Amino acid sequence: MGWLKDETGLERTQANHVPLTPLSWLIRAREIWPNHMAVVYGPHRKTYAEYHARVTRLASALAKAGVEPGDVVSTLLPNIPAQAEAHFGVPACGAVLNTINTRLEADTLSYILDHADTKVVLCDPQFIPVLVAAMEDMENEPPLVIEVADPHAGVNAYGDYMEYEAFLDTGDPDFDWIMPEDEWESIALNYTSGTTGRPKGVVYHHRGAYLNAMGQVISWRMVLHPRYLTIVPLFHCNGWCHTWMMPLLGGTEICCRDITPKAIFDAIADEKATHFGGAPIVLNLLVNAPEDQKRDFDHVVEVFTAGAPPAPATLAAIEPMGFNVTQVYGLTETYGPATECYWDESRWSGLEGEARAAVKARQGVPMPGCENVVVMDEGLAPVPRDGATAGEIMMRGNGVMKGYLKNPRATREAFKGGYFHSGDIAVQHDDSWIQISDRAKDIIISGGENISSVEVEGVLMGHPDVMLCAVVAKPDEKWGEVPCAFVEMKDGHSAGEEELIAFARARLAGFKTPKKVVFAELPKTSTGKIQKFELRKLAKEL
Image (tube, rainbow, N blue to C red):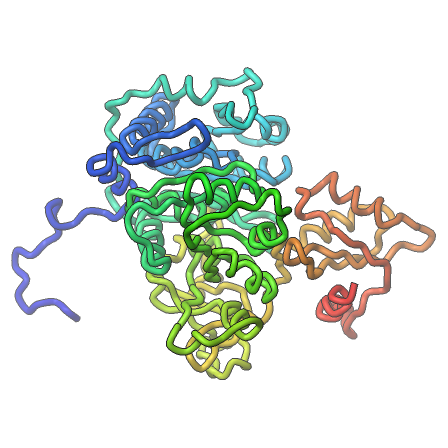
């Protein structure tokens, strides 16, 4: 279908077919904007020529250290220049980039390093202790550690490992980048929490990264030379592909290590940041910032927000401050944003307040790169577009992962019927806009972080006083929602709320720790299944 009846001699060659990869954009940017500022972080200011040179040295240094094509290089870094450089330098030596959540505890970190078979880790000094603890628990050979000092933030190296700048010095400035021979080759590995508590390794390919980034240029209505502020952690879906996107437009990446209202307002006012992405909690930080931390600026800042629908009050407060907020929706498995709440000015220009926020709270329509996003029932039939009939969000397209590393069963399940199954429950309106109505599998999203309720429950069940527990989301003004534990105690045992929270905090990352513990008999069905929907109702009233 679609072939000419005679295509003799019309074949793919090196002249007419080149694998798509975001690596090509940095090569291009160095050629046409060599002196334009590429990366900014305090006194660290690198042009595209300098950025390309540092990336080249990193790729060469990794190859000299024994990293081969297909190996995994991990990072434990905040949003600092080395993290941006790794997004190009790691794949430029043929390796696969694995940016690890810096908030994870040693046990999960150890699992990821083993599962990914990591060869090298670039690590910020503040995470060296947890990395060391993780490596001591590894089954595989521990990776080579490169310590990335951050003098601008006053974070000095421990001195037990080679420092990043010295490592770059070992690299060859004339190193030839190893470009993919096939755009299906893997570019990144990202771990996402599963319902069992153990993360799954989501594999990205060069084609998906290229097309997802390019699609967001269209959705975000970008023009040349945007100034992008890195609020989305680069360990979240590779920062939603935004770091790969910047060289395409000759943009400037403004790195931000610590997400504070002052840092954001200063970047907007002083560095003229034009775009950033972030969870609704970031918007709340700006709205509720002390007056002495707020800054005046003379341009509109475009914001992508995701993780949970922004509250109407938040939208009503932040837009008059100079921010235009667009909600996007996606998962780690979709390279970040897969849908956008496109604002149809012809229909909604007159909406204000809660009515405007209600529309902006929708997850919206497919972004370029997703061929189809639809709400379906269990039989894979589209639900009626009535804004009331619930189904599961499913999607297909180039912006969907290759699959889960070393987990063919989970991959088959995720792709059943030829669609990626998101696990999110939604309705579809008559204008095709999608809106999430619930979350499947009891995942809690707190400040943009996914938390498995099963994992938290497993930890609390390990306390000697606990007989049974269930964890659900409790609405929270700051974080969107936080874990709330409902606990049945063993007879004769009386551990208090503070003790159980401390018990969990010692075994879990801080953001996974329950913020509230309620002692009560858990509601159950006749077969003994805990009725979490009842607990969610109770949590909303706390």
